[in-house]
Length: 444
Image 1 (cartoon, helix red, strand yellow):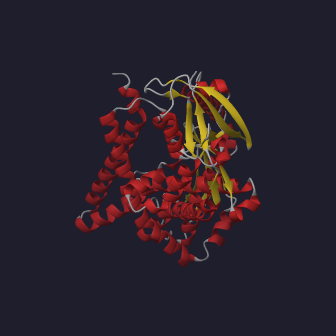
Image 2 (tube, rainbow, N blue to C red):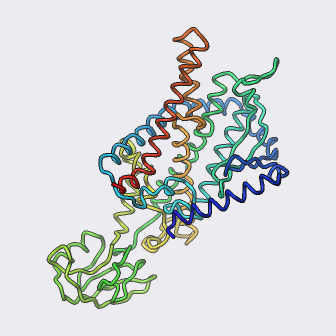
Image 3 (cartoon, rainbow, N blue to C red):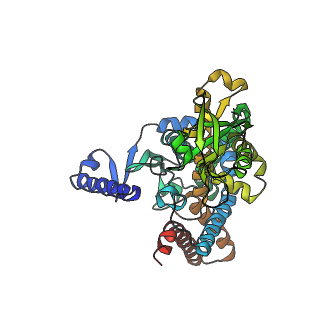
């Protein structure tokens, strides 16, 4: 049974359990609402905290106002990523891989194989808390009642929410004398979560790409990221996690030096590899096979240059003056998953970080994943598709334009609804193409 099938079976069992509990009224007795497989856990605890946090109202209004143009920029950026992704998928028709697997589209630790469980959970929890807390704070800034706070669960936590009074926020079913939010107030409430996610991402990235990365040095040598099964390297005892420092009398510091040496080798040649294993230096005698593609020797390792990877990470901020630079930041976990696993041994803290020892890389990994998940959740919520925050903001902005161009109220509402619905369908279709496209192409 493959990974995706197992995940679907577990989810199906969970859904049947939810149906069973809901039919017996068990969920309702504990204040839990079920919408298909989605559970909403509500609580009124923490509502007084919102009132206290909302006290500097001028600050929060300015904070949320900044988020409105950020959201509009995010709309165009995300639409561009979606449409470019669809175009490339339809043109190249790639086969299914881990990079385009459906579960890896979800930012859920334990489901997405590129997101480590520990750091992913920390990042996701921080993201959900700041997003929904900001919605609640801006609701109270506008004197809109917040009925509850809560958590969304679909087998695992997938979101959190602050539940403003919709009659006050949207003006639906409002009673005479009720407080009804103005359009600027609604825009601030909708933009607050996105702004908070971007603010946290900015702080985390400034720390990660600044003082943290500047205090990391790479060890000398070529890290072994993988070993080909049955290869001379495997037979000699080389394995992932080791660092090649020297081959014969040639010092190896990066992939270029390793490749240069291997280009001059031949089948049957015996080489002596000096590699460190958890800081202990060892010598491995290897007899090379014939390279299946070239007329040279074959070792069978996949190397990773620690210095090259560190240089790439440090270059990310300087490339954010282009769309490609932002795309690299958005795809960072597919390129670098943090200082963990087989690459952790390739780096060591220096300067102020040296005194922290292993705890330094806990800080580094936490900042990386808190920043990246907040960045992506903020971007995703920018999409102009209801019920996402970007969808509500797009609706409010377009309806404001429609009110200036059309006199009839019904025409304003109809045109706005048609456009918002159409855009939502286009976005949903774009996601479906990205998700199932590689699998459909494989059938033909």
